[in-house]
Length: 498
Image (cartoon, rainbow, N blue to C red; front, side, top):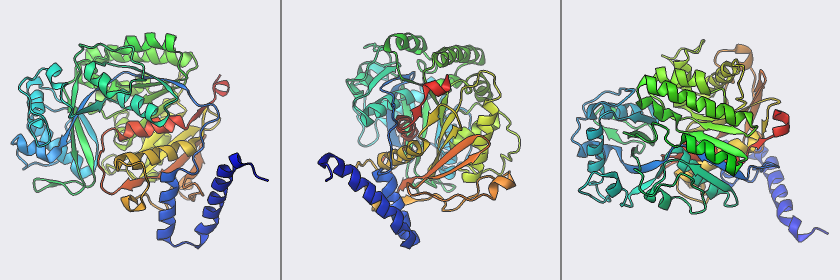
């Protein structure tokens, strides 16, 4: 007899076995539909045997104002007669127009600092006068925060919220600038040791566009994406870093997530050099305690700053999250050998990403104090989790699948799977390298869980196709949600690490 409590498990096993056997007799389209279902429904996801239960996240939060990129540019009266230009920073509305064009043409998510305070706040005022927004007469942030068109923003804030959303039994601590409005947007059970009711809450502009949107005659969006810009003071100076460090001793987390270092690029070089060293000291202290440490990267336009950041801190966390733009920028800033950056596409394929990840982990491991042993990479069509063989991280298969599932559901703003909402854009076959012919000749297949896996010089790779939402309702925050989901399904073995 089978106990009733075991029936759900037995049914799940039988369904997976049936799916494995039936794949052999399906057409390509039918196999794609089955793969979509596997990823989004998550039948093959396995939670780690010893998951993190207390997670501390810091150090950046803000209010996001989300508007139509084309609608705002038109309202601002900016010329649409532009060419795509990737400015490292924004000095004018013309720069903004050119960066939006570059983002559209290359399907690239971009984040930049707006250097002029007055010009920045003029765009904020204009954004709130667009349809479905609430207009206001004062430019003070306190007044702005009263309006409900603002959303929770900032990598740390979004990751803390997503972690709790995915598992309400977690204890989540968020150490970042939090005032009245951001506190209202956070789940009430998230612990906030840095809550200051009257603090200035920074505003970040999120300019979203849909696939096919046009700006002028030369700029047409290749996919749905966004451009983010801000004139941020508190986050760009990492005001919450000390409070984050103090809170860890009392909270005693199982996992620490750090983000916000990218915002330092808006400060003078002398300032960011000093603060990066402060971050390095914090990361070294945390890593030395044996607590798993994940660093979430974000877009940086200043390659000199990115080079300094890479050599100073990126080897210190044991886990790193980033997308294709950030991976390419890291390689450019570090002058990675063997890559022709002029010919690499803005969205590199699997073989180029495999080479870039191999370079990144090999390069960072040269530092004597290196701890990095896991990277979670995400791009529109596919995700890769790379783990060092014999390292402290494992369960990469479920980790990469969890991220792909979250990307699909969140982009379509749904909790229910409908195959008609999604499409697969990942290649069915691919080379494992563009530079190493011996590696390139190897072939891998997607297994019954929908994951392709391979090993290369001490690194184990897990690749999952992403069910791409055909008509995404939200693009901002997807990277943070992907990394948060992947971390919940990752196993960290402290004994192995020590």
